[in-house]
Amino acid sequence: RLGHFPLLPVPSPPCQPLSHVGTFTIRLLQTTTFQNTSFADTEGLGLLEDIELGSLDKHTWSIHLYQRWVRSALPRADWDTIEKLIKIYLYRFNHLINEGAMQMEVPYPFVAQCIAGCVLYPNRTSQAFVYVGYNGQDFLSLNTKNATWTLSQDTTLSRYVQSFLQNDTAFSEMVEMIFNDTCVDEMEMLLHYGRAALERQELPVATVFTRSPSLDQLLLVCHVTGFYPRPISVAWLRDGQEVPPGPALNTSPILPNADLTYQLRSVLAVAPRDGHSYVCRVRHQSLGTRSLLIPWGRSHS
Ligand SMILES: *[C@@H]1O[C@H](CO)[C@@H](O)[C@H](O)[C@H]1NC(C)=O
Ligand SMILES: *[C@@H]1O[C@H](CO)[C@@H](O)[C@H](O)[C@H]1NC(C)=O
Ligand SMILES: *[C@@H]1O[C@H](CO)[C@@H](O)[C@H](O)[C@H]1NC(C)=O
Ligand SMILES: *[C@@H]1O[C@H](CO)[C@@H](O)[C@H](O)[C@H]1NC(C)=O
Ligand SMILES: *[C@@H]1O[C@H](CO)[C@@H](O)[C@H](O)[C@H]1NC(C)=O
Image (cartoon, rainbow, N blue to C red; front, side):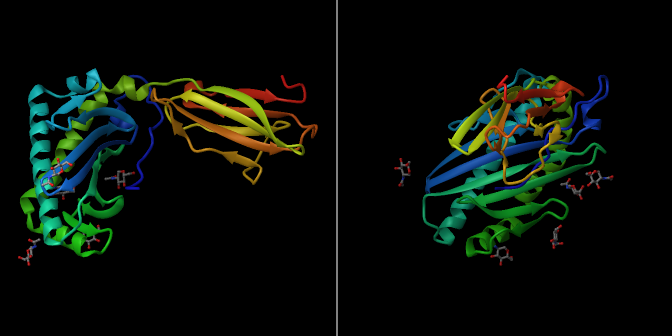
């Protein structure tokens, strides 16, 4: 786990620039598997909120964009510059890690991961972030305010990489510049061109069914799927009153579908034939002020 980032904001009224009303995050994810001193495999992915912008070609380190509007957002020369910076960065990153691994006699293979990006707030200020992981554990992070690296784990390897990064001011400055200035400038353009994708709304589809794990227990299942954006509210009403959180109520995490919509289920345990009426209530941005109400009752209708 390398951090927590804000969800999509509420949609803006028409004609208002998006960047004024929401908090937006660009994240670049990198996973490099070091097989041995001469062979490393790199995977890279760029995200704006939960939308995949593009990925890195494993072999050539060139950028493969997923959305037509992403290419339009920046002039050709900017894409060339970004691609060049990524290649320089990856080359130096691999060199630095291999150097550290040899000095510290770190056994191969191992995995290094980075998550870096910037957050743009509604007040137009921004915050950059860089986190480094080693074999699935937090390792180092960059304080963008004073350009220093903080240890997330205190090992001889993390101390070595920290001191190396602190010494290599050109590398730190490049990282800082990319995520301080470039990231924010280009985010403004992406928000403009990606507006339709960011404002996309998909209606939730809800179904209610039952399971009976034993004779004296009935599970009412409300399954909600196909919605976008991610934030949603799903509740059970007993005789019109919302059932409060408790051991009888069990709501799953929100899970992704393959088409960039989401799903979840809320399960309420009740006694069979308890004489109450039950309704699953769904609230979502795409429904406006309306709610989706799916009843389950003694009539099973
Ligand atoms: C490094 O790993 C690669 C991929 O597993 C392999 O093809 C190559 O022979 C290895 N090189 C050395 C020097 O071990
Ligand atoms: C802008 O908003 C962020 C997030 O709410 C806050 O942390 C920051 O202090 C604000 N900056 C200014 C200058 O108001
Ligand atoms: C840099 O900032 C971090 C957190 O903001 C702080 O913990 C650290 O002591 C600072 N380092 C220096 C050298 O000022
Ligand atoms: C960083 O610089 C300090 C002081 O010059 C030196 O003692 C240290 O070995 C250097 N670290 C690395 C990893 O090169
Ligand atoms: C990055 O942003 C911080 C805070 O806004 C600023 O102090 C620093 O000088 C910036 N660094 C670069 C390289 O622009």
